[in-house]
Length: 434
Image: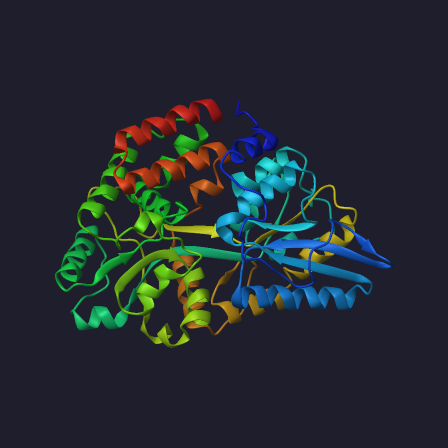
């Protein structure tokens, strides 16, 4: 029987590493700060936290304005918290009893912890058209047959690359790992950084471990370790996945100091835009960032799936993905009906079309039309995928998820062996999941 970890305990652990809540975060708010669920005179204020900037934030703001027009006397205080700080801020807010009325997540294990603690509003019996959502996406917000979140977006993790650099050096999109290694060697010989990695916050590097594990052992490897019905996280396949990571490091595949480079700040993306690096393994959020930071680069941007491994049994069509954003409401909100109406507005077909066409992202809603070339490619890959695996850190219980990111970063830094990382993961899995 799985143990349910206390969100309060997790917050206390995090507090050893986190400074005061406001510490240096670059946050934006549409109306300034307000108390949760507060009323100002005759006006009701709903707090709404999300992590996206640029066009995505603009899409949400437009949906908020439509909601406010439909609900006179209600004001939404939208606060953006950078992705790298968001999880910690939410845990602290939940443990302190003052979270926002509506908030974003990725579904999975992180949201489930709050749901298990009774801190997320159960949406199952509400007047919501659940049939409008992709089943796979909605499943990631459903626990014990109860729905706790409405997904708007669906992301995929792919290799993005600079087509101009590939053409200059006579390179083609690799289909196998051996072909990828040959590209890395060719680029190094010509003083081009092969791959940008922004691994300060650990999750970008985790994509490599998940893909190597999937390509080697198929989607069954993680499911078996997670469900505790076969192999564990110390399976030799996970050790082999760690060895592949360290082979890339030894091959000089990444930019200098990659374990200290953050994603949110944008330095890593600038390496790609400026032609200093050729490739980046990232979610399709990169397209959103590129369109706001370097729109002229769009004609140079190409993509290809993670290469196949010759010694693996995983399906090469498998792709990493995530449901994001997922909108949920705090169970203690003073205005549950309004919170639900806000989430519904944030997932209407109008919002979904706006989200897809303005940001170049896939939607978690069914049959959203688009003429965006990138979105069409993402949709084609998703449709052809044998399996779409969700990020481990959004599926595993938080304590185990953090260890997964920590050990993977250690693998990239070569301060831990693949066997040591696998053994630590399995030891914690026995404590957390058995």
